Amino acid sequence: MVVGAGGARYCTHEGSGSAATESGWYREDETSPLAGVRFFCWERTNIVQALLQTTRRLILGVALIYCIAVIALAALWAFSPSLAWWVELSNMLAPFFFVPLVVLIPLAAWVRWRPLLGVVAALTIVGAAMFGARLLPRAAAATGGTSLRVMTFNHLFANTRVEQIVDEIRAQNADVIALQELSNPVAQALAQSLHDTYPYQYLRPFDNPQGLGIISRFPFSTTAETQNNVRGQQVTLAIGGQSLTIMNIHLGAPVIYGRKIAGIPIVTGYDASSPTRQVGRLSQLIDAIDGPLVVMGDFNTSDREPRYQQLATRLHDAFRETNWGFGFTFPDHKRFGPITIPFPVMRIDYVWSKNGVLPTAARVECHNTGADHCFVVAELQVGNTTGQ
Image (cartoon, rainbow, N blue to C red; front, side, top):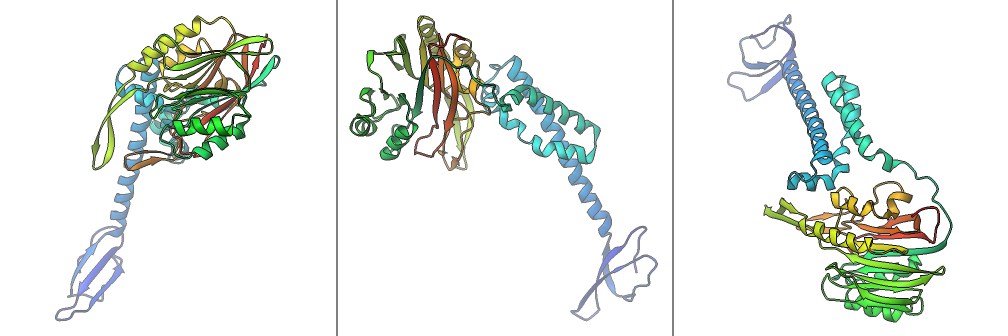
């Protein structure tokens, strides 16, 4: 019998001239009943321990590297957000890089390995600094002025669920609604089904993403397309004894370059130069308006991107100032090649205001209406003297 030092061995033997096979566990101090028979032995305990140790080291190593990489990436987001296309693109999805902390924190506490404890603690602090305030309920909003409920909705020009779109618009009971990618079928349905509720309609439908529309309970004093090469509509209406300007904006989207590998789209580049220029031109229009202003629509701009700050320094962001959480609006059940994203992962649809128009509440609704955007509904106070 062949034996080795330490532990039990698992032995399989074959009897000479027989097809029968026997196997069993034997300790070193035991005499095998199979003496003289050909057999094979290995140390099961040592092999299992080696596999477990290797797996443990691999898991801890991957966790350590991941934490360090995300911390480094967060530094790039903070100090060089436009350094490279992959920095810009990853910045838009930044909250999801911290989701693994749900597993990493208990893992670090369990293994008590100091290097892992340190980087997990550091990553937790970074995540809390970046997003902790968004997870806290907001203080009560200021009141005063005339109440106005508005809604913005990119319904997707190719969306054939016309009746469902109209039903959703009706159900929100908004005073003014801004629509992007307005299609001819939806425009016709609005004119027919909602004319009694919204008799004032400024509709410019197209059979492509260029369509826009504003419908209102209040009469328009003026209607026009936005200037300065910005895709949008601009109307004025009287509310609370004041003239309110409302802009319906649909900025162009960044260009995402990619290729398919095994039918799966892989991103190879990201270019946001076009929407960045558009936000610059839109900012000029906003600065030129002195009276109460509401700007809403699809801005194709994540609140993690630098051009968001160009708007946030000028305007009140209704969702950010009155609600908590991330308020993601895009994409809603959108299909990219063979992959369907069942929930939104970024916020690109907004209700903004300034000059005595303050938000008191806002919400995002994702009802799988056939659109690839969720819609935003906001409660505003026009003529509020507590802030600009």
